[in-house]
Length: 442
Ligand code: ADP
Ligand code: MG
Ligand code: ZN
Picture 1 (cartoon, helix red, strand yellow):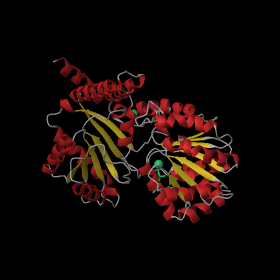
Picture 2 (cartoon, protein in one colour):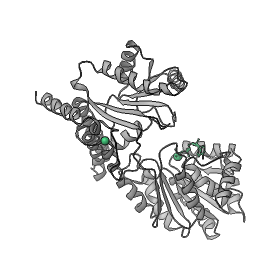
Picture 3 (cartoon, protein in one colour):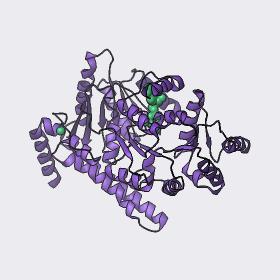
Picture 4 (cartoon, protein in one colour):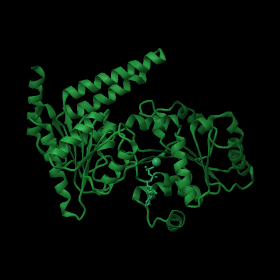
């Protein structure tokens, strides 16, 4: 079977091998078709292939649930470019095209292999006869739920329509369900399994720990000149890769547009090639900044978190956070853009209690706004606060940073072996915390 999977991988997708052992294991498990499967792998790891390849090998149709029409259109186009029969039914589809698809789905042996659909559409009454028809004729091979964290109120992209997928699932007996996500702390993972009613799923989860990432926290308020400090950090981080042929690069994340401008300007003044990237720039300037960074013409991009989605660059030697991330999950994802090539890379937060107070204020303000709009408070409103508290406690604790992150995601504490400041220099970390405590009483 392994051989035929590999052959299919080459024939349909043009890939010589699976990206990772984990990807191969998932594809094998899904292709067996007898169990529900839960997949948690980072962005860019190749999760789509985990259902696309089995979908092609199965007799029937695979139903793929994805939250956004834009994401769906992108995926469907990619598949069409590969000559794979895929399409989507959505509210924007012209009536004529929709009718063609329906006719195919109602035929005795549909040509279509992958049908992408939003959770809203899949729950709509107009789609039910088609769905029941496919199921009763045994033509549904798999139900794949992409971005499955959207089902969880603890997740950041909660979508109420995802909650209906549990019912959908129950109406499709015998169809194996596959849930995929990139970000899932323990509580979100449990929510996914429960809400989608996965039946004793086989779990494939990329271990959280990445030994090549060196984590540390610097208390910015203790520094005479934070920009000079950041500059020195960047110099050092970029020098690490001088052993390989390729010059490394890095990302500095700032919370605000002004922050990006100021930091980029200061770094440039200190002699590092840096450019800002944020939503306030003209589209052209923003694309230029991204391209120049991708091509290595600009070494440092100073960006808001809008930067990085879909950016997959191997030689990112550092990710510095000039402001706190909104949660530990976000921090893990953002800092995880460093070191994709496996070489040592640094992930640093410049922490300050002033920053903490500001973000705390903004989070509470946002919750207040939501509640005012809604008229009632919800239990899940608190999750933004709890999430941020975990981020703060990461900075203010004197314990292994890798262990904090791994535990947060439900993994065992890893063997850090000096890959964080607390394990490498516990005395320095303690001294920093003590000085900061003194400062805050003044
Ligand atoms: P994810 O959903 O996990 O973020 P995608 O499914 O979008 O990732 O895949 C990311 C990229 O990796 C895509 O461009 C995809 O074509 C590519 N990819 C997936 N599997 C392989 C593979 N086995 N070999 C090479 N490239 C792959
Ligand atoms: Mg994906
Ligand atoms: Zn450690």
